[in-house]
Amino acid sequence: MRTKLLTVILMLAIAALTLACQSGGDAPATDGSDLEGAMASEVAKYAVFELTADLSGLTENQKKMIPLLIEASDAMDEIFWLESYGDRDALLDSLTDPSVRRFADINYGPWDRLNGHAPFTDVAGEKPKGAGFYPADMTKEEFEAALSSDIGLRSLYSVVRRDQDGGLVPVRFHDAFPEQTQRAAAALTAAALLAEDEGFAGYLTLRAEALLADDYRDSDLAWLDMKDNTLDIVIGPIETYEDELYGYKAAHEAYLLLKDKAWSEKLAHYAALLPELQKGLPVPAEYKAERPGSDSDLNAYDVLYYAGHSNAGSKTIAINLPNDEKVQLQKGTRRLQLKNAMKAKFDKILLPISDFLIAEDQRGQIRFEAFFENVMFHEVAHGLGIKNTLNGNGTVREAMKDLAGPLEEGKADVLGLYMITKLQEMGEMDDTELLDNYVTYMAGIFRSSRFGSASAHGRANMAQFGFFEEMGAFNRDDATGTYRVDFEKMQAAVMALAGKILILQGDGDYDGVAVYLPEAGGMGETLAADLARLDETDIPKDIVFEQGVEVLGL
Image (tube, rainbow, N blue to C red):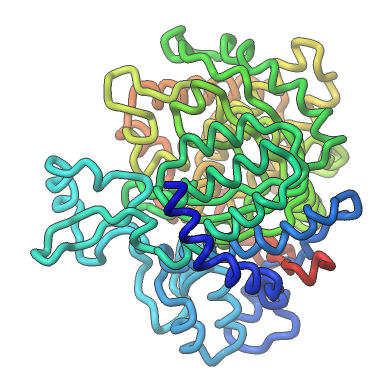
């Protein structure tokens, strides 16, 4: 593999370096105010945010690495376009209305990701559930029959194509997207030569090799082992949300990150409490028998660049990785809080939503610190619970198929609140912090539900709203159209929902999950009405970035 990699580098490194140094990132973003046309108001639902950070503490070598890492990220962006839609340039060139073109660029295709993947151009029909991972004419029955003779069809790291006889065959990503894969590997390897942190250099080299072989476990382990690096990059095929047919296929994405070491030191304490919190989960012993790795860590970062799946539609503000269940059980995970993007969503979206939908006497409890903690404990909570079903149906992810994503996100939401509640009982938080977290969480349900049922997070939050509504965890004032959290009932609802989701996962109960989660596009009447009122305001739904080498001042 190393010989192959060196050959690739000799052929491509110069081109990668040149492209990286010329890269200016995405085209300048717009909030829609300077656009005219059919979709200008939809573009305006994304608040523009400039992705910058203080780079003054970086060495010259580290600054030289950034364009290379952006070049590798742009290769992931190109692959994700192919996975989510197809030919990006052909689509954008076919759209004459600049607002429609901009909206397609934000959504990585002609479907509105915050509106259930509804098509917004005449060139598109319904978005395929399997995106570009499967043949368009493939049926579920055909795929499941083919699995009996080729289990490789279910691989995270392959697309499914037809052979010359019309049968289904897996094609590994590095074979399906050779040019982009090789370019990314060359850029990562060139960056590794500049890395002054030995662990980061080793990770970049292993990640380059992983892209060329579609074998990520060694690089995942190396990523967890490195602790002192200032720059970081999460890159490759990672999350499976784009595959709404089965949830089997990982989509390509990248985050280029700058560690905030001061904030990270504050967070390190909580990761050490994870095994103890696992023991206290409100479920029978067999549903919490697995022990999360004790080497997990928790860090805060400023994001320097988003690409691919992470940049499509609603933007991720925290990460819990790796997803490999064996790595999680062996070493745990790393939780990454994306602080600058998180602050942008808090200021531009969550606070205005709170002023509109949260009772006036509880608005003072909406704080950035509580929002940060909600998101942080959501990511930590991904490490709790169970990864393998108790009935021999494989991993939870395999058993839950297309419902794995929204159920796991719902688990992380509610277990995050469970953890905050337990930490208050342990004396790690005071009563005020706990109540602030509950109210901020309630406001967050409205923010995330606006992502729609096409988003795993949106669907998860719709389900939580319905469950908490039934448990009386909040009250709605019909006169003002605002919500007030009932703290005692909210606490009981958190414990009840935590137990429900953990048991569904442990039992591999796909049918039970289908009952719990709202149907795609569906939500309760009360929530739908209030989100409709919210849509009549000028409060953005999400953010869109101005980013790249020039924005960073390099």
